[in-house]
Length: 268
Image (cartoon, rainbow, N blue to C red; front, top):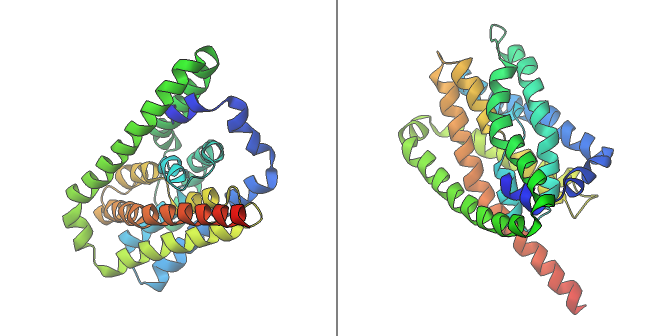
């Protein structure tokens, strides 16, 4: 987030938000279709209650920081990805306390507990980068390049560590929850791709944004609201691993497809 702020201006980040149809479409899929998809898949795969609840919490939490890096891998519009996060994060903070008690009537979700890690780890670094860039443009350009490389390395270490530390729990969860998480990721990506069809220059961002869920927010809910149901946190973790494993190759495939189309147009 800091690298994106250093590499883009405030206008570049906020300008896409003026296109209200795109914003409404992104909100509809992230806070309408995605939670509904999670609910239907939990019923279809007959998941145990903790696993079904974990999938629903993940489906209701939008605005993953991984979106920026995967958009970069896909050679997509990183500035629009940052704009999308600016919209999705506050909505996730407001949405989870409203929707989770519907699935678990006795649950009490704290909006403040969700907001603190998201604001400090995502919105504040973005704001810091945006404020430094006009003052020191040359420094910002160099720092953004270095931070972007470091973020790629850190993402790889993070994914590997999540798999290693939670391998036993992920394997022990069983085939149905893993399959449900995989189907959720792929169908959500397809819905986002379909939604973005009229906007080919941001189509991959909308698709990745729909498929990638905000695991930080989902983890806060799982650990603080459902600490007595360990299966909720296990499902949240498993879904995050499945999503990243699937979406890394998908983002590279999108990149190769875009490059192939560019070469065809150039030779035509």
